[in-house]
Amino acid sequence: MSYIIGIAVVILFFIVLHYFTELEYKQKFAISIGVAAVIGGAYAYNQMSDAQRQHSIDIELKYQQGKNIRCEGLDVNQTGFSYSVGTQTFIGRESTDHYSRMFDASICQ
Image (tube, rainbow, N blue to C red; front, side, top):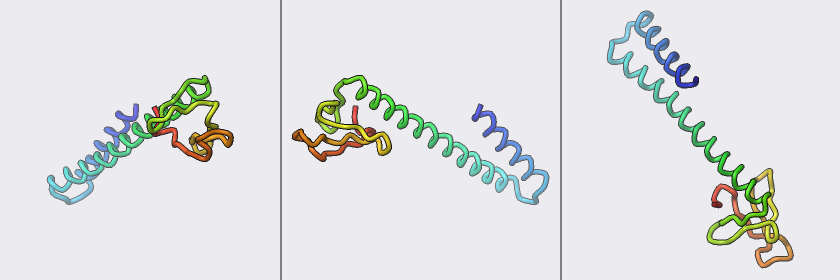
């Protein structure tokens, strides 16, 4: 749906430029391409953010299920690490060798 709205905005913008400005065709086309690039960039950024968020959710779910998660070559699990939901970070528990080590969930697999 967002594709359709983005394309419609670019077409509408080009029509407004065409009929209500005295710019040359090349200038109108360049401006329209610029607007399309901004819309495309915003869409790509949203897709990337959604993928990163989904990855963090998947990592948190594995942690909650008691599975081992690999972070920078180290196995992270519930016995050695706690999970901070607010910062999406694994923090080493006090009674372990990994005390105060921290791993961002986005770097884990």
